[in-house]
Length: 462
Image (cartoon, rainbow, N blue to C red; front, side, top):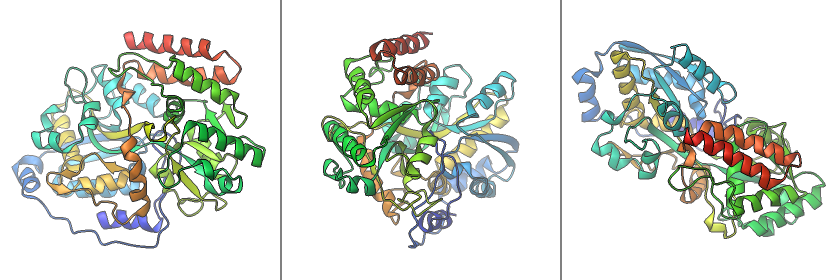
């Protein structure tokens, strides 16, 4: 299957799926090159696992997955499950596909009705800080052996473990969220002089100079601080935090710090910019669509899945053929940028059925911790692995023939703190976009931010 997934990435034939966090489509490079993937080989460890009891486990389990790359595509997931069933034929996996508009409500309704899924695929902000904190998840520490702990990046693993040491997420893949510009329009506006295109970075001063130049050239809003809901809110948080060196929470993830002088200065600067609009009618996915249509010339909700998008044109191009350049968020010193990371993996709801829990753990180990299953599972996410090796198998060359992936990897060095595990996260996200709406409607920035922090910290304290 690895050969099939890589070929799909390379020829631009990936099916549309919703982008994790932004609610828009995922596409691919449009290159005609192909590569031959190595044949699958069963390691001694995975063979023994199947012979030692994995293959005779019998259970019907449910997997609910948010649209994490091609994990939101039934054809892809069916193929992954077929491979899993070759080793565990007695485990029947039924999948339900969620989106970021209604997914949380669906999960919460299921929980309230005692019908939570066995497995769920998402990130630590939900699995650890939300459902895990409420005592709804199974501790997966028993399937994390010393090899796993040595292979998985420490910063990733720490985000999947709560303060008491319980592991509520087994991580699979990750990425750095960023922004993007319409390079063609920037060139026409003579704004590329403010952009370090080679390193995909820029300073805060140059960012605003570029915004002004493009605004003068086009006469229309260049970028939008979208705030109709939480979709893609990692973009607005990263934009505001980076401009003048602010943070969203403290380093210990105990309280929210968006009321700092640095953050207030950043929000005020965006309010004062003629090139930037606050738009309460759109969320991240809507912003991306407007960017692709040429209505906006920067996008604050972006990542590698978007850069690979080829639904309406070749990857790296807008619908009209303008070139798209991905960028780190601007900071006072360009290389000080701190990007929000996305970590995705699996969690198990504690439905009090030991057999289903065992089967769910076997599914996780196959997809996220086996030489056979993990490469395809990561490729299907269209993101990067959370480890360089899995059970000794090298993962660093997964995307070696996909140039865009190689180029994008330069942003991984700028990954910042994974603060999404701060208590009260769900309430803080809602309060955040409400605050942005208030500011966009003319409210005093300091007053609105103080109200946000009060609401968020009250939730964190409960």
